[in-house]
Length: 598
Image (cartoon, rainbow, N blue to C red; front, side, top):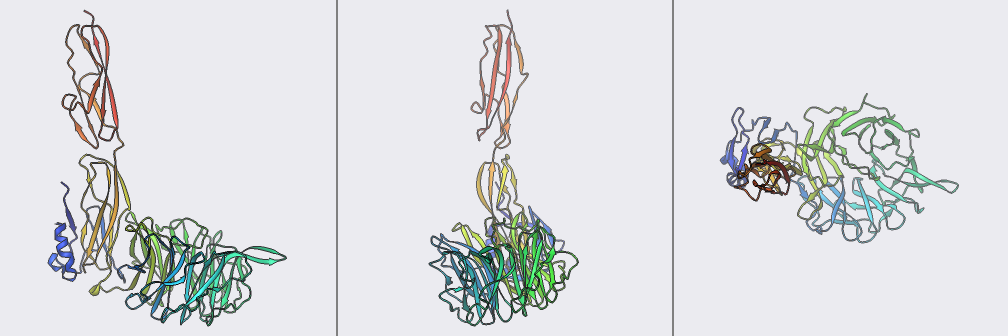
């Protein structure tokens, strides 16, 4: 029988772990704040503890994340959410995403109150619905309103947008604003930023170069926040077409960065003038994705290289690099395949004190959403990385982050929802760590799938990784039996010191691909005197999955003998022994019996 147990991580240094049955957990979990009934809740929990196939850590965290919240409870089950992003306003966030259903993709949004994460809209705001094909949203805030931009694929692809009033969610532009010039050249993948006076929208696509010639360019245009109209009649060109790009602004200065044989960038001033006609070379890294964050006087440019997430700081006044080498922000990062769109699995913002980087990484055999604090001086201190959520292997790649004040920010992402078998947009509100009022559940990671070779009476535990900002009290990881082929889902879970519960599922597949082992009793070559009755010595066998088999007489359906011996007729007689295991794998052996002449 498989023990139905829960591993208990002691909260007292030096204390031994003991096993509690699951029914004890069920008795304790509803108590939440009264977990003292289950055992001590002393905050001096050990920092690292190894248990049954698990790593458990109580992190020296400076932040805690709220419980995961869905942006909508009215999303049709057949739809798929994608490309979430977010901007911060005055005490409010606007989370924007694309919903792909049976009809054309829609651009939806919802306002989130910054103080407590409450949804301010009972149903999503419909920014672009029911008509043109709308993709790749971006959003920025001007002090009163948000501007949402996207790619309109209804005819020739164009960049369009609409403003949303922060105070009440009113859509100020029911008819989308045309942002890219009406020249009918295809334009794609916008990013929008606000420099303190005007919006700047950048995109990649075709542009007229003169004499009837059009070619790819990374281009931009300024918009008036008062009515969303274009300041320039035509776009200005930043670089040759670069689909992997991003931009950020602060106090009249803007930096556009892109990946092209290294990481490059150009500054744009408040008048829409490109200051670096020869691009700034930020890093030789072979990057395919970039993101930019801004603070007064400088920019942080994030980019990928291999499985590492790196960054460089750029001074706004002259484009000088502020770091002697690339800053390592994170390792074992996960990046989506190059889709040709301006997509990334990481993002960044400045919270008034530090840069906050949101990214995805491989941890504990699974995929996690993580955040790293990069100081304004460009350092990543020990303990600056925190886990926020465990992600399913099929979850979307896009993420978004925006901040209100130091250590107060919101992250948004898509997570695979097995109940509808599609991705859904989620968010978490992040604030300073407060273990006296801990609302952040543990971060439990485990492999999405695991395949094992069947082993007779085999039991093992899943490799899981548990983090918590204040400390773990219980970890449930009962041994799993893998002595029989099949597929099933196994859940592991953890409860922190405040009673917050989190779990993780692994789909186990047990296969039996190895043939059984078969051994003859006695010699494979026997000699029999004429007229002497032949007595079968038999054979023994076993299987890594089924276990031991008896000889031919006790298990005639397992080890079968083909052939016969006639002791009255001299000659050589072959006997074939065949053993087939429960999964159909077969082994054979041969014995020869020689009957001597009289």
